[in-house]
Amino acid sequence: MKILVLNCGSSSLKFQLINMENNERMAKGNFERIGGMKTTLKLNVRGNKEELLHIARDYDEAISFVLEVLLKPEYDLIKSLDEIGAVGHRIVHGGEMFSKSVLIDNEVIEEIEKCIDLAPLHNPAGVAGIKAAQNALPNVPMVAVFDTAFHQTMDPKAYVYQIPYRYYTSYKIRKYGFHGTSHKYVASRVEELEGKKDLKVINCHLGQGASICAIDGGKSVDTSMGLTPLAGIPMATRCGDIDPAIIPYIMKRDNLGPEDIEEILNKQAGAWGVSGVSSDYKDIEDGYNMGDQRSILTLDSQAYKVAQYIGQYMISLGGLDVLTFAGGVGENGIETRERVCKYLEPFGVKLDLEANKVRGKEKCISTDDSKVKIYVIPTNEELMIAKETYELIK
Image 1 (cartoon, rainbow, N blue to C red):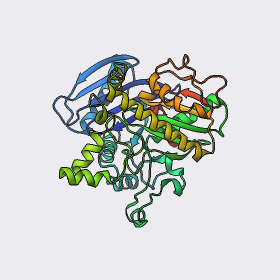
Image 2: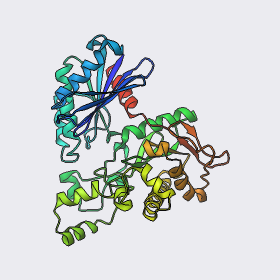
Image 3: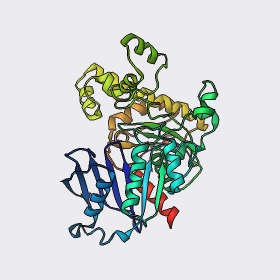
Image 4: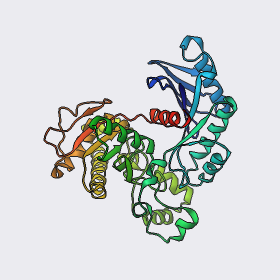
């Protein structure tokens, strides 16, 4: 069976076509600038890359064009749309309603729409993508896979904020966590690698967005992101955890409104805000190696805070068996992993510096005498979405 995975952003559409017989990624693409005149589809068919210009005013036009591309004889992907057995949709926020992936019907769409206030940039796009896919493939089953679902196993002591309880009962303000599909994939892969299920794992999904997750026996115990993806460790342009009193202080001093402060904390903070150089970690790493003090401060501060979260989650788990690094920076950041693990040496976490010289490949990078196994595990959220979709509809 072939499954189409769709990930709709505010102005983008990422997709993959996956053959579930052998887990082969047959094609993937990223449709950028949807709604503009210069809409570009970056396509990768079995490693062969090209860019296609096509005007897509909305998700209906974008998804229709993606299906046209998949049908082209020269790509030898599918001969008919009937070969697409199901569509898996990545949905960012499922609130408390969804603790697992679900088949999509009108009631599910309504519940996703109720979470728009919790994810105003992502959930509207997710709903638009679902409806466009239903229009294009009316007889194909659709599945919603939620970023937040994996974290619904958290205990209330982990997700309740110490603010007046009425804000939870009235507005559902609590920690939800994100990157759940990535954390779940890594947890399942660790079980396969270690040949056992009862493992205490901390996964560091480090990229433009980043989160840490404590996983016990394959279930999320705690995670660093909160009500929104702004919380936790500092990221490329997001601030991560800060003293909340900073917000009204800055608003008063600079005469800012709520939208202004949201823009600053989400898009002008983190690595970009401190370094003043770039939000691209490769650029900042170059600055670090050149001795630029703000680049050094940016990366040292981030590694320090990642290590602190790992320490917290050792307490949450009551120990640690496996530490994993995933995401663009986690998978490729040799220096980042070294900086983080240096802080953990007092706990018996020992990084093999030679084995650590790896980018984008699955590998054990701990020493033989390390008390904790350390792995680089390239995440595969799309494959996880495809697997969840397949399990639901087969």
